[in-house]
Every structure is written in structure tokens, then in C-alpha cells.
Length: 509
Image 1 (cartoon, rainbow, N blue to C red):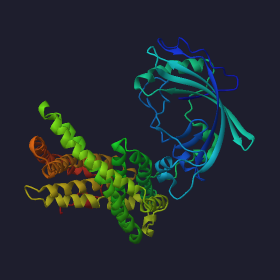
Image 2: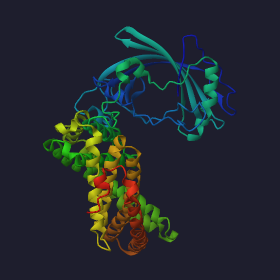
Image 3: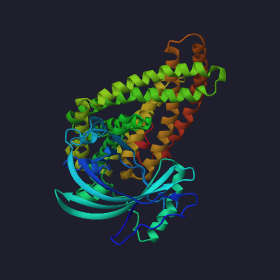
Image 4: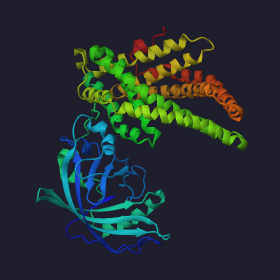
């Protein structure tokens, strides 16, 4: 947490503020820091920073998580707490290390990084030590000089409380904030130092951001906004995919890729096909690369959970079986990283950013969104309903998987037009998501059984694979019994009031 501070502020004695926490004597250090960014300050605008600090090396901070306690009624001390991934690198002072550049490649792409801010900081620091001797947090009082060559261009001061990693330590922040505020510190201000130094340009919206839209907005603005939302998700999750520490990174980038392909299909009649179709094709390539990893990660998580229900005597064989899957994922991740490092991927990102700024639309896209988009957004629904009605009494696994894909497209289309047609589309999208979920459970179970049957194992491992197949078969049958009820809830007319009347009331496939 950062607090403002004026020239007359003095760091108060913090001993005794929290029982069991002692405060070390103040240390004074001088820090020389250089921040790197693109000429248009892309990193800063995305909430990312890359710096070199003398004596410490390179540090990359990724976009912060939402503030803890926001809207939850928690104490004011926690209301401005931010979480950020902070990664350090060794390397020379002249240029950022290759490993750091890789993590910001999606933001930088074909641009270049250069020094954009030089800060000299006089830091007074005290550490907060717990009863067990561990460092709980530290409080720093920073006097910052922004340098332009040898000239000091600006000065400012801030107080920062940094909590150590353990979640339980966060509760100590509020009383220390109260003590600092009582001593004259200003209100919480999350603005990073380099953003203050860079000024208003660094506070502009990210390179890609959705537009505010209304029913009267031109259709092209709504299309642009939904494309921008998905492109922004790809850019934000790219570093998480490369870090490989959180499977959600791959999942969220894949979802964003699927949404983009779905939007380009749904709103295709208002887009120039020679522009949209090649882009859909490239997104298909990216989706396959992400999907290969994501599908196996889902399978691993699923089988790990299933293995917990097996007898303890089978745990070693189950672990050996899952290790085969872990090796598959490792190999697939290497392939994915190679794809993300390719010129093809960077070209796709450049095309996506351009699409988010100015999709190539037909003249009809200048008409009001309320007149043009609801009709297009019901296209995926019509295809879903027709496919369900044509199913045999006992549909095959691939047929149910096809219904899931169509449900997903109907959901994405409804979400895209919700700002135009209102909450009815949002409710429909939620109902479609439930159908997508139950059929996703079915497909995941089918995929698990296929992998277990195909894996080459013998002896006890084969026996364990058989047990897991039996468990998955039960899950498949359960999903088959339940999906039709979920579909019927989606197919109710009240759920479709937002659709154009001729579509919502049409009883023909």
C-alpha cells in the first residue's frame, strides 16, 4: 500500500502498534533506478513495469490484481492493498535480459524498449519483525527525484507498506496505516513511482480497451468493443502463459481466442470477409496450440481428483500413471512456447490489436447496434436449437460435443449484445453457460476415458486405469441424464424475450 506524504512528514515510532511485532531501527539507502518502456508507454498503460536498479538487477512487475477488500466492507487499511507478480532477473545494465523481454513480448511486439524514466530515491526503511523472528512487512519513506540528465525535473514523496507473502500478515496493515495517517501521511494512493514520473501519458488507457456503448451506438462500435475486450485478455494472459505457474493463464487466453473466433463468425455479415476469414484462421491455429496444453491440464487435474477416491494401496500406481500425463504436458508446453516465440504469433497479435482499434466493417455497420446486432446474435441460437432437435434419442459423444460448441457460441453472442439489448441477453448467456458446463463435464469424462484406454501401461497401473475408467463412465452417464433438463431451461420462451420476435417465436428448425 502506498500513502502520500508532504515535506513536513516524519516517520513516527511504530513500536507497540501491533502486539508481538517489533520494529527495527531505520536504515537509509540511496536507490538509482531506470525504467524501460516503449515510446508510447505501453507497459505503463497496461500496469506493467520493467526496471533496472543499481545493486539489485532487473525487476518486472506484471499487472496488479484487483485491490483486496474492494466492495467487501473490509477495513480501510486493506481497501488499497494491491497484489502484483514481481519477477527478478540478473543481467547487465545496458539492455533488459532476454527472459524479461520474453514475458512482455505480447505488449512490446515489434516495438522496442528504451529508458523512459530515471529516478533517484532516498529511502528510509524500517522492518516489522514477528514474534518468531520472521519479516512480516516493511515500511519505507521514499523521497524521489525524477532526473532529466543531471537536472532534477520533479520531486515527490511517498510512504509504502509492503507485506511479506503470507496471507495472514495482511491483517497487520490497518493499524499501521492508522498510525501513519495520524502522523500526517496522506490517503492511500496506488500510483507507482514511475507513473508519477512519466506523467499523464502513462495514465492513459491501455493500448487495447473496450469502448462504452449504448443501443444507439453504431454497430461497428459494439463490434470493436467486444473484439477489444477479448484481445486485451489475450495480451494480459500472455505473460502468465509464459511463466507456466498458473494454468488459468492458458485457460483465459484460450477462452479469449475462442470468443474472438465466435465474434468474427457471429458478426461476419457486417465484416469484410477478406479481412475477417484469414484472421479467424490464424486464431484457429493459436487456439489449437493453447488447447493442446489446456485439455491435458484439465485431464490431469481431473484424474488427480479421481485418484483420491482409490484405495491407498493404489496411490503409487496412480501417481506413476499421472506422471505419464505430466510428461505429455511438459512436451506440449515446449511446443506452445515455441509457437509464442514465433514471428507468426507476433504477426497475429499485431493483427488483433489493429482489429481492436478498427475492424474492417461494411457500410451497414454504421447503422444503430440495436437495429443490426440482435438479429445476428440470434444466429448461433438458431443453429444450436436446430442441432438439438435433430439429435437421435441416444446421441453419440461427438454429437453432444457439437451441441456444447454451439451452446458456447450462443452464449458468446448473447454476452456481446447484452449492452445493447439489456439484462435478458445476460440471463440467456448464463443459462447457455450452464448447458456448456454440463456438456463440458460429459466431454471431459469422455476424453479421460479415451486417454486411459490409450495409455500404454501394464500390471497394477493398468488395473488403476481400469478403476478410473469405471469412475469416469459413471460421470458420463450422469451428465447424459442431466443435460436435457438444462437444455429445456434454456429453450423456454421467457428466456428469449430479448431476441427479435420472428426468431424467438419461430417453431421451425
